[in-house]
Amino acid sequence: MRAITRRDLLTAGSGDQHHISSAVVLALPERRKDVSERLATMPGVEVHAGEGSRIVITIEGPTSGMLGQTLTAISVMDGVLAANMVFEHAEDRGTSS
Image 1 (spheres, rainbow, N blue to C red):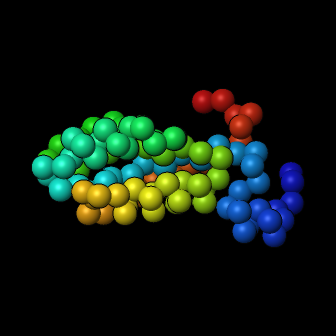
Image 2: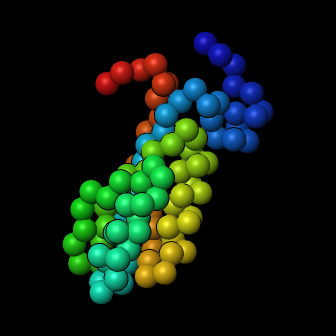
């Protein structure tokens, strides 16, 4: 087992893991389709469902910090009212499901 370093803590990961999170994005109802289309073009983001003002997405990346940066970028998008992470999971790159 590898020891956790200060760098691991500062970068939210050692780079040998894959992170995935689910999130719900709350958009202005009349802008939901437009926001969904823009989300689908973002690296690591996949849109799974949308209804009313809610959009369900997943975000994947190499670190928890990258997921947080993506969620922050989403939260300030035009037409977005809020973006909230629901769940996060990380596993070693060598682990298969």
